[in-house]
Length: 332
Image (cartoon, rainbow, N blue to C red; front, side, top):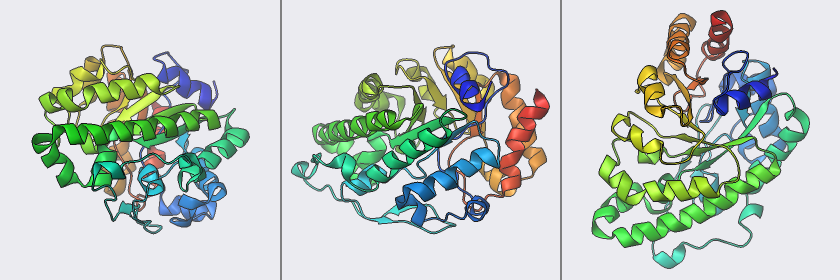
């Protein structure tokens, strides 16, 4: 099997020749930037640089599937959210909340032509043309709850769930429409699978009851309307909500290091594959030997795809990331 075949087999719950290595959250180290000659923040808005930078994780670090979108704020940026695009050592952060009133939440007719959405669509297209036969090409969008937090502000959303639930549900609906449109455009551009980054809906934000009331049906509709395989990521220990994942219709769940691999595998009940969950703090500050221990534990538990548990710091040393691929190969 080549990398693409290996990843897609595992994504669908099958048995590849070995467990694949992939990532869906941000993972662009300073060392990879120097190796590729493509640097952040410029690469966020240059599709050719973005492709060269991202493919380095396949060529140099052994990843079988690569996401060609390196931040989760593209859709808000296209809708007028101000961003600090960061540096080679810092990922982008949003600096404004453009939605104030209900009428502010509009979907522009030229959404897909606006940067940086147009940038990542071009990058996926270029990556598919050049590398699409050898490795899996991954896209990504924000989750609707996370996007609402960016567009409105976290406090506005969380208080609104109590004080003005109908208003928040309206904004979630607009976010859903934006994200489905962008997701399907990525599949049309050549993506093999797509990540939904719902970090803002972590355990510290929503109880199981609030998740069921406000977000479960939104996630179900989103996944139903996206025209390709989906991988959802939610930050933190969402153990009390793991049972609801089986109702979403997703293909794979990328779980955080805070969830024990055996428990995650058990809770999936074979209804979706699981991807994770190497501790990103250890990837930054630990040793290759400590990474190997975690990879072995995930493999022993039957994790379908090895990956970091969340976003990886650009300051992470390549040797620790490469240790994931080395551990997989050693295991098999």
